[in-house]
Image (cartoon, rainbow, N blue to C red; front, side):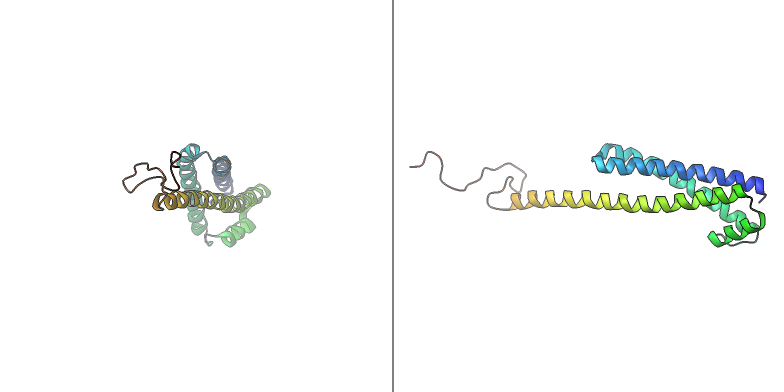
Length: 156
């Protein structure tokens, strides 16, 4: 891997990470706003960006192996020590920073999803409890039923 090719590859990989982070930010905002319709659209975009990031990482790993280095952070650091220029190091550091940012954002998104699921489960539990109690809202066939507690208003 020549220094010029590697710089171009790092630029492309950084662009892929930036695009992924943008989609993840939109996903986080959609979860905060409770916009489920937008989430469905973002899932497709997120998958596309994840595939792009993965392809770039696989290519970088293959290049590192071909250059006699391990396909990981220490291998990249060793390659940079031998061949890297300041711009290579800057691009690599940006890539590492974006990876950390994506991990943190993924944890926040996971927490938001968990909160939404918990809220949905609680609402379902309330409906199930109401439907299965004597004064339920629905019978087993799903038909609405009136509560039978107390006396009718016309009773003396």
